[in-house]
Length: 230
Image (cartoon, rainbow, N blue to C red; front, side):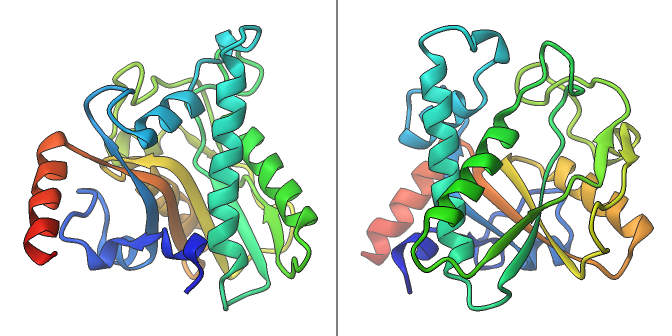
């Protein structure tokens, strides 16, 4: 298996699952990295996530370059998963809505930036046989608190009520790849999944997360387990 694809792991093969995930979400979701809940400098992944989520208020600062680098890294790794898939040649990709409305000064364009990079990378690939179609059928009705920065809700019901159906710009797909940067409880993913299935219950939804959240204790337990098996 290609190294870039092998980086991604299935939740169904792990003992840990985001608590809000249903069985279908567990069976149809993958992640590439692990985010530790102990500061930005404890791992390379934490540093990447910290930079990827860097506040839009820093856009005129030299540090913005690190956000740009993180978005490129995310796109490279996501392309590594999709481009080496033996399944469809066309992927319908949707990202989980961020916490602020477009046009708001706090709107974070991180997913816009990442998707732009993803499309560029695919176009530059010598053997590109995949097509990435970006859809945003769900949008926010109003600004909400960010779960990571402002301690906003991670409950499915509460997140769900802030969503609004915008619809597909192309024909209704048979499946969607729903992308997020970090999955902690799975609340945002499941709210999107429920909203889509309310309109189109037969669409298959696959979760792709750049990282999953684990505690420092979980990381320690994994290290011990690896040493035992090693």
